[in-house]
Image: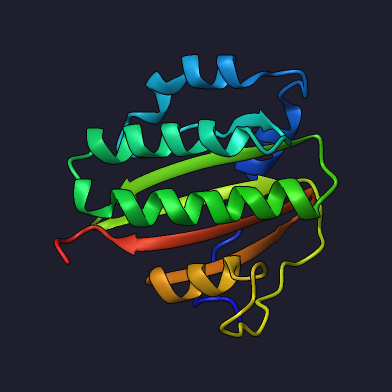
Length: 164
């Protein structure tokens, strides 16, 4: 069950779709400088492989530290892993995009993929070994949701940036 009020931002996803699919994690990691602007950054495409989750975590943790929000590091790291894992495992896409934004006391993390299939939050039982991703996103974020775009979707979460 998605969070409140996602605003569709098709220009970001369209820009991501225009970037060649051959862009590697090394290029994305090397292009971190534009992401460091607290007013927002570019969508960085990563290849859809399990090891790309580590790259996405490194990018997100670097920004959280640059923004002076170390108290959010563990939560951001876990939730980025979950959204990236969903994009890699369930969409069949060759690439996905990562974008982060920090404004007015909120951190927003977006994972874009070219599939329009909506993710679903599964009921979680104590002994389950998988299917907990969106449950964790829903429990640990302040807001989350999915924005359907002309080409794909953006799954996002937001965290209050104030000290918890």
